[in-house]
Image 1 (tube, rainbow, N blue to C red):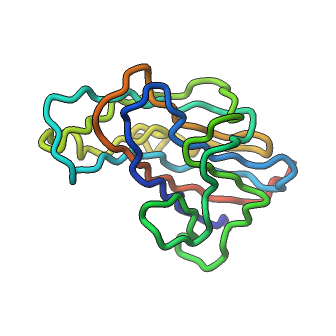
Image 2 (cartoon, helix red, strand yellow):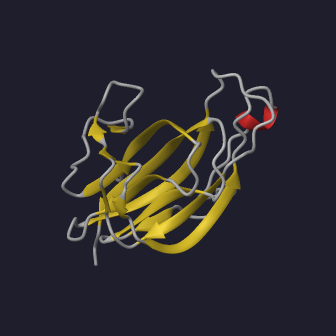
Length: 179
């Protein structure tokens, strides 16, 4: 049976265009498959914004692990830090096999683009709080996105910086790679 994990990505400023918001990478030789079930951006509603532009967020496959930025912790307790926590079981993730970084500054080489969403950040706009999944787009008949060893994903903000804060809720599972 697969082990499920939550990757918690805290809110980050959307002021800088083309920022790599985060990456998740299945390390080569891990012996695992990672199935990404959802990647949902979440806007912070605790800051008053009016008339702001909504940043575009792009989900890419990645062909190299991210470097720089801030590495995820395991079973962290701070809501201002990126962490991977076991979901529904007690087996913590092994960071020798799975890498995740907040705003990596290098690596995380782009593979193909998979999807994008326009994420509202204005707290008074009801669209700000609509859940948007970059993986299945609301269609659970679509299988999860499989990351084989040596592959990953990343989310990149589009070419416009704007006011606001966006974090992410990511659910993934791991299972042995039989190939």
